[in-house]
Length: 149
Image 1 (cartoon, one colour):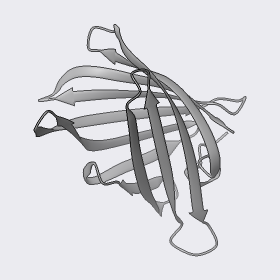
Image 2 (cartoon, rainbow, N blue to C red):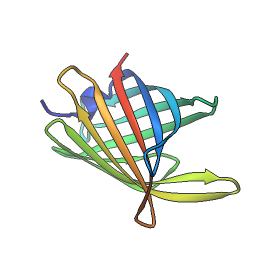
Image 3 (cartoon, rainbow, N blue to C red):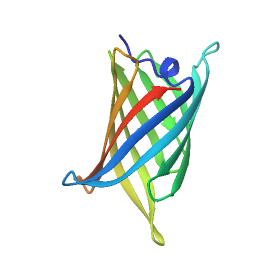
């Protein structure tokens, strides 16, 4: 079972998750809806993934990813709150992704290094663990379960 980004993240998806502090305590929870659209008929294979997160305090965060397949197991991604290019690599049922996320904290922005690991399960769910770092120090994690709607 291979994790093929353009196959799984095509069409509507739902997501549930939690944000944890660096010590593993629950900070907040969220639900999200996603929708992917891919052009797989022409090279290079490319697509977009819109995400809308609704947090337990009512805050809503939207992100639009643009992905391009750069090799048999490699992709690049970009979004408005991502600095530079996100690098993605698949190996069997696992997808790893590294990028710099720019978050707004009060009146300033803070760049965070993010390492995502996603696992495609045999029953069609995706488990995701995002670890966020600042100056190489882990500052928090995001755990999610994603499924096709």
